Amino acid sequence: MKKTIAIYPGTFDPVTNGHLDIIERASGIFDKVIVAVAVNQSKKPIFTQEERKEMITNVTSDIENVEADLFEGLLVRYAEKKRATVIIRGLRAISDFEYEFQMSLTNRKLSPAINTIFLMPNEKYSFLNSSIVRELASYDADVKEFVPAYVLEKLKKKFRSN
Image (cartoon, rainbow, N blue to C red; front, side, top):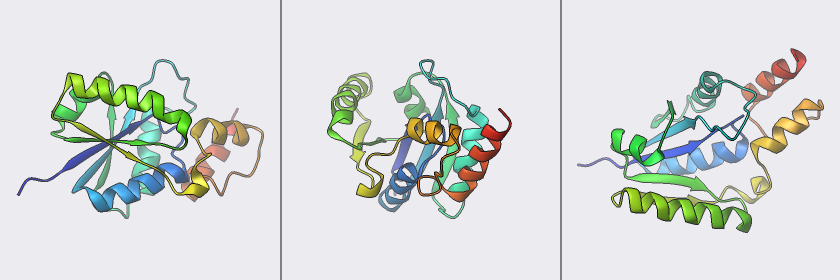
């Protein structure tokens, strides 16, 4: 029987409870979910790609069919290499839709065998993104409701050392 492999790409700087919500739900839908930590030239992450992968590995360690990986370059080429047939994208608000829809159509043009599935996080995370978490944490604000405990400790350590 063919297994359905899904890729959930992002910068995950850091991984938030909204990301984790989507990962958990995707793991119940697909046989395997690869959380792919991307290099994004337009963003200046506070954590290295390896640190982000390690955080994802830690916070998903109890989810059997989830693995973290690193990738650079075209997402569809990475998905083809991993034999994935699905790309998972999170939609928090209507403002996300236009960009994600455009990317989905572009990816379909590049690789028609790969489908994009949109998942919405729990509404309590619909406003949440990594940029907000980073900014709040940089001002020593309490972000424990927004990130897993392990990530909270990494954020505290990162901003204490700066």
